[in-house]
Figure 1 (cartoon, rainbow, N blue to C red):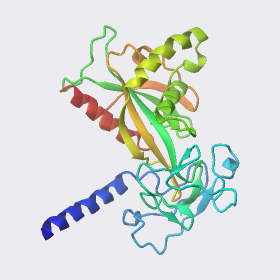
Figure 2: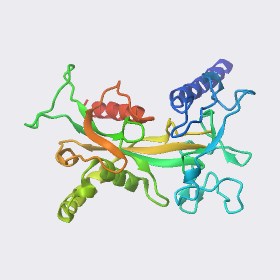
Figure 3: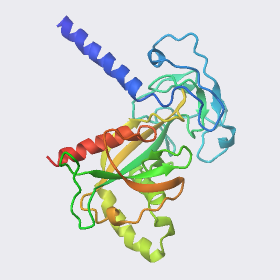
Length: 299
């Protein structure tokens, strides 16, 4: 019994360590985005807050230009800002998908660990910043409609990817959840704004596609909910997302829609999904899960 208990505890610790090191890489080390601030080095064995790190002196950085923005929190400590941590605060959700997070000296603490920088960085909220990522997929087909197969005689899954204007990386067409907005609504809105020509359609075309979008986006499946390894993360503010897979099995709905880069995207296209693909933040991890689930569904 003692050996079994020890083994279970060992597995829990190892799983937690693996999660930290595989979901907390891009937000450690290097220059913080849109700044000249260099993060304090955080070795793998110092990520966990429980690991002693007396030398840890991260720079404190909050981009001044976001202060006063309607989507941004005020600085902590002001009399006009009394946030309800780990709760729904008015229309703003400060609840983490990772479970309750600690408040240390009045500041929310990144649930995964140290990032080498404290403050809010360029994120709008202290604590969790919620996003939604739609993973829109189809099977790759010839013009005749016949499925294209890979070398192993398996269908090839494709997904809609946008090229981010800020980093130049390919990513899922997601975005931030507005206060009081349902996550599913965010996913639909972001896909329309970033990956389709919806914003430049005529009123007649919008009406035609609105019904198709409404039906198509009712069938989404949650494939991931949690922390995002985003370069914007800090010790006190971090990205989380809910990712949905919307699959166009015969390619007749979204698969037939002309893609058009909009909003913050500078490019958009259908991309073949592979286990080795590299995308922005944790998007490649999300896509790999979708790929696995879709291939499994064919068996």
